[in-house]
Image (tube, rainbow, N blue to C red; front, top):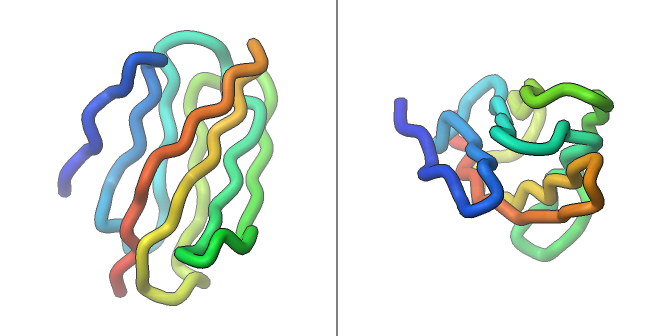
Length: 87
């Protein structure tokens, strides 16, 4: 299992590739929402858990492929992380 490197805003996403779920963590502001977008930019999943620095998001229902996680923080910051779903 690999973990993506932490970016400059203290966000990390693991594992990638993912099978059942992903975990998004923030070392700074709390996570307000995580949206998963497919390779064509279509919204395929949304998970909200306000005021938490860690969020679990199921991905088992998604087809295998590359996705972008759009992470919105409570301080207004929005960052994008990549994740591969593989079954």
